[in-house]
Length: 187
Image (tube, rainbow, N blue to C red):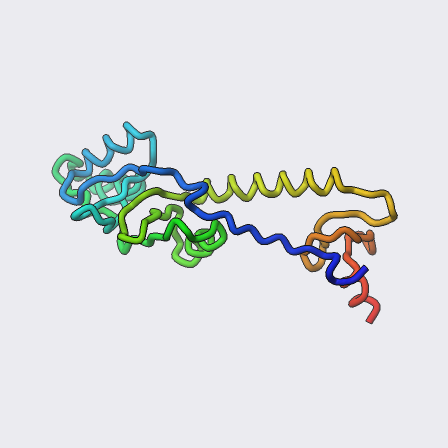
């Protein structure tokens, strides 16, 4: 078997295919109490803060707890614009799931508002959403490997050394290795 027998799975699922549409938004002049009510109505943990219909920040349950409740401030008297997290990191709907995950890691955020070409908010994607998609892809790949297993002395799966999907794995020293990694070991 040669290196073309190993496959590298790359997913290009676009965010517009899996984002949550019509996320909860609020005007930056609204109060923290208004934001909390909007979150409760929508059963979500954040609201995207808008100014002139454009996203400028995000207010989360943590922002409310740490910036209002912990300081004994009155939610009905505090503008949500005063406690929102900024700068707001957004992403385009045509971007991929992997690009969104990279942005979340790079910026240390758990939520990304999805915007259109006019910077209008059209959706939101969360870490939980991305993990759900990744888990579903892993389950599908596992099923594909199982149904395509042939008893020819080789196994199909993911090489323990290089991480590539391969149909020619052999168990060597407690690891499943593809032909490329087995060849490197003999050098």
